[in-house]
Length: 232
Image 1 (cartoon, rainbow, N blue to C red):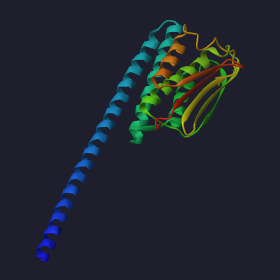
Image 2: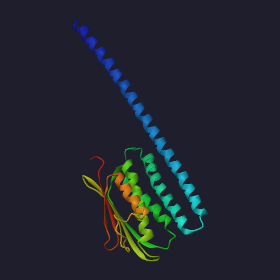
Image 3: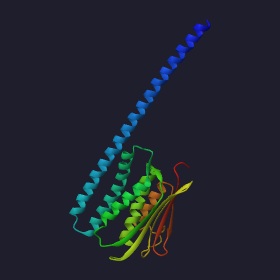
Image 4: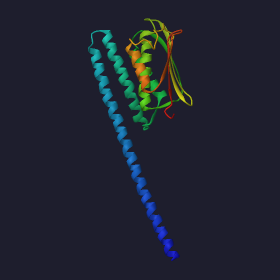
């Protein structure tokens, strides 16, 4: 009887182990399938955004004045900002978070390329920590930084004037901080200036992620962004 019970227990354990292995393999297969699907989705979104960017670029070449050409180029930079997130997600295979430091470096490079022929002499400095953000936070933050840095190049300095722009990214236990500052001519009160489309856009994007905006107009303009880390 004892021997029979022992054999029965071994058989039961073997069946249970086998079933667990089957369930584990099914779970791994399902996870791999979902990761592949997500990767393909990000790849397709990136390609679609690239098409939109190309269309905007084509329209920009057809405009007959600088004002509308600038509008198309700014819109193209915003599309690039979103597309870059999907590109980083697709490359990293990490669909939960992206390295926002790497992302900012690429966004800033795109902006500098777009203003390279404007005859400006602006020195941009970066102070970045390693910060990882989820996609729902990274896209609004990227668009905010794109808008603020573009505004620095467009409005902070007169033509041919030397200037400095500083971008900071840091994070502590509870919050992430972004800062874009320049030593230019300053700007009207940030919070009350609802006539500027760029400022309204920044304010709306900040609300999406529950961020607190701060503004200083001393020795140029400085706009800060503080929001809770996604783990809190």
